Length: 150
Picture 1 (cartoon, rainbow, N blue to C red):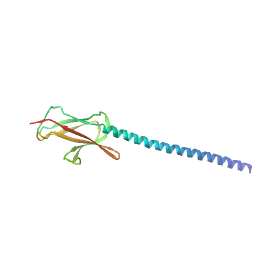
Picture 2 (picture 1 turned 180 degrees about the horizontal axis):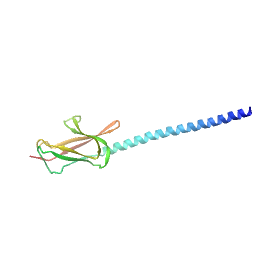
Picture 3 (picture 1 turned 135 degrees about the vertical axis):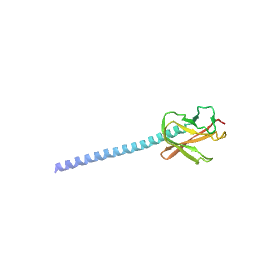
Picture 4 (picture 1 turned 90 degrees about the vertical axis):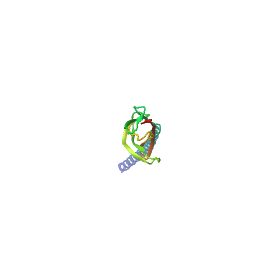
């Protein structure tokens, strides 16, 4: 009988130690999950801040473009490296939603766009790069005015 009582005490002691240990581990897991969520949020905010700092430059090899002559224009982000994936749209109207997708899934901080001016007044190219950051779309505009001659 003494052995049964001693065995019961030992089992209860071990089980209470295990419960305390399990409770402690659950608390640690909960804290780590909270820290992980905070770190993800901080990283997302840093990515967002980084993308808002981008600007796009348009560069032509010629000093002026000719009417009805196709020319390739290099567009480069002020930040040159691999960046978060983005799509490029040509703004086709006066409203920002009037757009046409011209490049999809870009990953490098530069892209080319081929342009043919229709007349001397057709001297403005308006593009927009759109970054999809989970639930937020970040739009970076590119607005280039070029010299067009006959």
